[in-house]
Length: 111
Image (cartoon, rainbow, N blue to C red):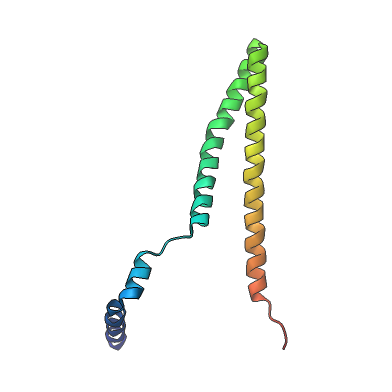
């Protein structure tokens, strides 16, 4: 009961602060982080389309043996491998940064 009353008082004081209210209402990720998030989602969509396309083109190239289909399969396959490598490398770097970031914050140095 007492805690609820104290929280209610704090909320009324915070509601009166218009600058804080505006800043909290407009709180968003920085543009750079929003663009990175969009880029990661697009990379996933690209890979979800390129991987089956590569497999279908490879099957068609093996079945027909036409030079155009073989070249198309090689080009799409190279793009797929390149994007897949970038996605895996980015994920590993993110994990490495997170791991080192958390371990650094736990370190204490004697004064």
